[in-house]
Every structure is written in C-alpha cells, then in structure tokens.
Length: 456
Image (tube, rainbow, N blue to C red):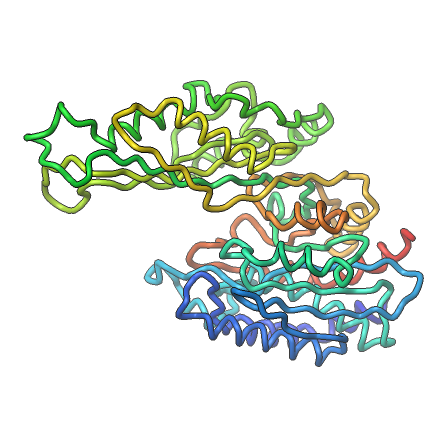
C-alpha cells in the first residue's frame, strides 16, 4: 500500500496533465452538435483504460451516446467493485460569465477550472488513476474491478438502465463506487447515503383553437394561463404541504439518530440565506432546512410559458399554456406512483373549459443505503486516512437515478464517496475542482480498495 501511495504522490504532475487532456474534449451530451465530441471522449477514455492495463476495455454503442466498459478480474476470492461515473458534461451557457475558456482548463489558486472538472470527469478519473497506481506497482489490485462510464448522465441516462438489465452477469459485483457528489463543507469529507428521486412532468392546458383578442373574447372564454396558474396554486398549501392526495403515503420518516446527526453539521441558515441573496426561507413547517432539502419531498414549478412575452403589449388570450413541474421524492416513494397521482389530481381540479395533458418527461426513484454496510464503512475509513479528517454522513437533495437501478437490478449497494465541494459551480459557469480533493481522492480510492478487500 505504501508503494502505491508513494507512486500517486510522485505522479501528480502527469495525473493532472492527463486530466486536462480529458477535459479539453467538449463532450456535451445534450447538444447534438457535440455528438462527435462525445464519441471522441469515449474513444479517448477507452484507449486510456487499455494503456493503464485494464482488460476488455471497450465501447458499447447505444441508441444514444456510447457506454465505456473495462475490467480487471484476476482474483478468485476477492470482492468485486463496480465503479460508475460519466464522461459527458453540461452545456456551458451563458458563456460570457466564464472567467476562463470552459474547454481550455486552467490551474489557478489550487483549483482546476473548466467544464467537467468536478462533474464528473475529475471525480471519476481519481479511480482510474488509483487503479493505475496498483497496476504499475506489483501488477495487481486487492479487489476485482469493473468500470462502467456512461455518456448520457447529463441527458437523463436514457439507455443505461436497459444496458444494465441486459448485462447483469457482466456487471455483477459486490458494491458500486460512485464519486459524483460533494462534501458537506470545505475540509469536511462526507459520505452521502441517500439521494432524492425525481418525477418531472409537463402540464399543458389548452383552451380555444387559436389565440384570441382579449378584448373581444375576454370574460367569455377561459384563459389557459389563468387556469394553469389557478391549478398550480392548489398543489401546495401555505404551510409547504403538498396537497396531492396520497402524496406522502410511502414517505420514510427520519430517525432520531439522523436528526441528531444533521444538527451537528456546521450549517448556518444566515450564511445560507446570504449566499442565496434571500431575506427568509420557506418550506414544510416542522422541519429544518437540511431536513427539507434532504429528507422531505418537494414540488417546484420549473418553467411556464404561454401567450405573449415579448417587449411591449399584445392583448392576446392564448390558446394554450405549459408548465414544467419537478417533484423530488424520498425513500420509499416511486416516480411512477407520484406521476400518476399528480395527473389524477390535476384532472380533478381542471375546469371543463380546457383540455389537460400531463406527460412524464423524466423520472428516477430515490435511494438510501444502510450506513453500517461494509462498503460504506470502507469508504468512511478511506476518506479519513486520505484526508486526515473524520468524515460525516449526509444526504443530498439531488438525484442520481441510476443508483436505484444498481440496487433493484444488480441487488448491490452504492457507496457515494463524492469529492466535490459546495463551491465547485457544477452545471454553472466557472466550474472548478480543488486539486487537494483530486489528489486526495486518488489516494482515498486506493485505500478503499484495500479496506473493502478485507471485508470478505
């Protein structure tokens, strides 16, 4: 182990240079004009995995972007770790807010700046480099390894679920190691043990067969925007409670141990509000801010359109109005059930003057892992040894839907050993990744393999 850690330390400059090469490829999965770049990133990654000594490094084509797979399966009695990550990245707009070129990474102030640095190229690359350190020092790892790195995470992972279901034997493992989350605070290593799921729906209200003059028809024909706004106002109460019948039926309540643990985390509501530029917070009464964002379901209007929104005035009574609504789900809710319940409720409250369409655009179930699981405990030990600070447990309000697929299809737990920081600006201009977390993450990955090997 000492030789491996010494090797990682001695190769830091090269490890950074290789990451920069990877980051320069603009693999934006959500924009068709970057399809060739996404393929190029998959090809570069596959070649790199071959070069460091992994076996069966190959590309699996899908109806969307490619999936990269590689393995090292040389040990008969050792556990197998499946490493998941993604090589695709978010779009860079608004470009004018970037202080550096998003695909020309810059090292400054102890960080590397550029799109994909933290989400997720930099984080997944830590595991690739730790694997290399083992293979270059003795030629073997303490565990068997499989890597599954997709190119559609930022576009909904549309084809990965089917791929996993169709390749269960190839992907069989004892745990999934994922680094695509962040620490609770700078300098405080964290293991995330639960993620919220999501149900994302589009609601369309249609009235007359064309846009109408609001003077000629106003007061006689129902306005779809007015109707939609009225319906949306009925989805939540003033106390922050979601009014959809049966919405909370399956919600897993917090344990007292979890609540006590959250209270010990260094969280300040004043700093939280100051950072967001708001004067007060809101949400479901009876819960703290962390409990609301981590452990309670939510419902938010993400966008609304209809009628005339240009400069000046146009007295139009629109033909239709559209709203996009996301609901974050918690264990043990299910996206199909919640999508059905909101559609049923909206149909109940929609007036006969309009036609209503509700479409599920995207969904994923929540996930929670036992904190005493061997793999989770190995992750806690690895972070502590690599960074010299005792880690904390946390949840996250966001979603990584594929983690639930690993649990339900492969029947294995996920270890969310994230390395990002709250100020990494993922999905935003000026994304960055702290180099201490990059190099420390490589060491933590190497230590995790050793710790997890001893659990069998």
